Length: 195
Image (cartoon, rainbow, N blue to C red):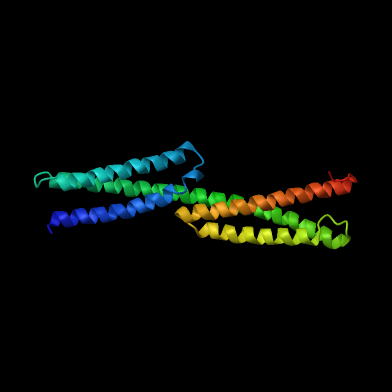
């Protein structure tokens, strides 16, 4: 194997690694909060394509052009890696912001739950705002949401997307049950009969 063949193989291996990193970032593109965020991803795609073209040019380069083409490939690869670093930082910020927002929602519902538990303990009557079953359900739901949020914070790439979908489904169910409970409680307090 020539020195040039070894260099091309090294570049291809580095490019496969960078492309895998790009695909991990790309898996989270639906988190993009602005056109700028999407542009970061689109730009990464263009840089990736450029590196692949440069590697192909290396394969075709003759001895006279080798140094010039090699410099072009290294420059393209360096730009792609810099862009990936920027994109990784951007997506990490978006993931963190998403997690913080969900954590705040979870804390808010937890505070409501604490209020309901206090009301339940205070009244202990059958006509309490929440039945024991509803309290148990919401307590489990909050605990599950907390665990799913913890998993979400540690996940990356496609795993992150799956963890987020699980969290969102659990959160929607918890929110829906919470709304029904509040609606039933408001009806009970006003003396209206439920529909």
